[in-house]
Amino acid sequence: MAKKKSSGKASAKGAKAPVAKAGTKAKVAVKKQAAVATPVLQERVAVEQPVRLQRWNVALAALFGVQAAVVALLSGSVHSFQVMAGFLAQDPLQTAAQGHTVLVFAVHHLFDVNLAWLVAAFLGVAAIAHVLLATGRRPVYEAGIVRGMNPTRWREYALAGGLAAVVVAMLAGVQDAGLLAAVFGLSAAAALCFQITERSDPASWLSFLVGKGTGVLALLAIGYYLLAGVLYGSALPALVYVTFGVAAAGFGALAVLVWLAGHGKGKFANTLLTERVYMGLSLVGLSAVAWLAVISALK
Image (cartoon, rainbow, N blue to C red; front, side, top):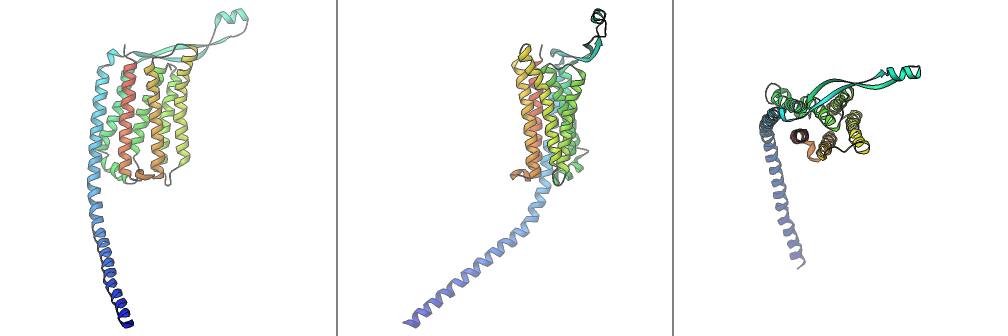
């Protein structure tokens, strides 16, 4: 009986051994198939994804271009805004009365700007940028996207975003040419700082913080005028505050996206997916600000 038991155990071990070997062979076979399939899959993705990006760029160029044309056609129905030069000037009456030079703040009218043309301009800049990415700059663009870089995007944001910030500032009541130029410059600087963050390896968080700070300063300058209007004057139409809120939310979303892409967090480690998110954010943000601004400025 003892011999039978031992033979039974031996037979059981012998039965398990082939199963283990078979399992090991199956795993090796799967790994070999994956090793063969991976280059094929990578090659397919390398071919398909740039084609999709090109379609996105063509679509965005068309959407921005059509919107720019429609806004330009509406220019006759949109208010013009004054641009002034603020400066100190001598008050002759007070100077004569007090016996010494008295300086007062004065303004000089420079020119008027039809808001529709500014809106059409930043939509046109976005359209031209996507046309370039879909045509002449496509090889450089696609090579950069593999490394998670797109300099053209940030140049587009610098120009289009800066003009959009000027539009929001004018709606808020900013008329001084110097302050409007500062709002444009701060907004453009934010985009260019984000470009430095993107192309740095590892990501430069100093440039990220500077970019975020300059963007916030531009928003604070506009927000000050909105707040001063409520405290000391008459409140502006509600749609102006909504336009400012959308612009601020758009900048906040852009900063978060730069941070996620720089850290390679989750799905944002995929540079192709990240690029499509940038495209979607640009389309939604600029389009929303454009049409809110145009509706706010209708006569």
